[in-house]
Image (cartoon, rainbow, N blue to C red; front, side, top):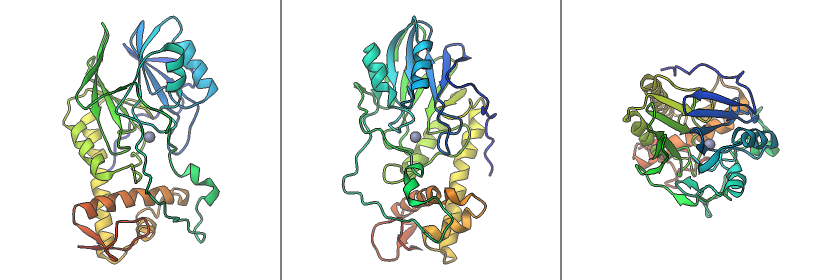
Length: 318
Ligand SMILES: [Zn+2]
């Protein structure tokens, strides 16, 4: 099932404040990459008293553009969808400048006992080891909200709009989508992107939680989705169904590979991502890994050695 991606916004301007809906403005940071597409879209909601969603990465041009977009207005709230370094770091600066409270589910979870396995395969034409930081979204461990919000909580109101928290764990365990009660609008952060499937990378990325969160958003009645990366989704239901269908299809293919004896993650990626740039095979392994962790959780798959579902484990159908 292919995903009906929304119109591309490759030519959307950087460091400018665009009016994208009556109460919504967007400033895009010049941080394009294989994780961020054209760049991070920071949203400004409201006319005079405004809320900023995901102030974005530490980038002088973005900070200055945001500051001029906010000139003459009062920032009354800062919302962070999650703590990847392209979303949350400028929240500290904006809070220091405005004293506006920062809202989020919580800080990024820390995994002290987690040992990362080295899956670098020198025989493969893949990104060299020293480029590891480009293979993973980096995390802003410094961020902590002033106000922790909970799922379903109407956590903010102005005379123009109110905002409700929609907890959507999966991309990260603390991921938050934000519903605005004007035009049935949902700001989806990285839970739903307008240009690509979302990265779900263990240990904090969790495919089982992600799929539950997809069902949750499908069960809502939003009329428009604004992702952090990519353009607006103006017909959410078919898009979300296809987005979820793509994951379930991938899971079915993984089970099928294991049943045919291709039972390691690098082997599965070689088969299922044969037509994808090899530079993306390492992130793809983490995605397959997140599916296998889910399948082991659900009792569909086991590890051959009986141990935990590691990146370099060998798998079998249970
Ligand atoms: Zn992210």
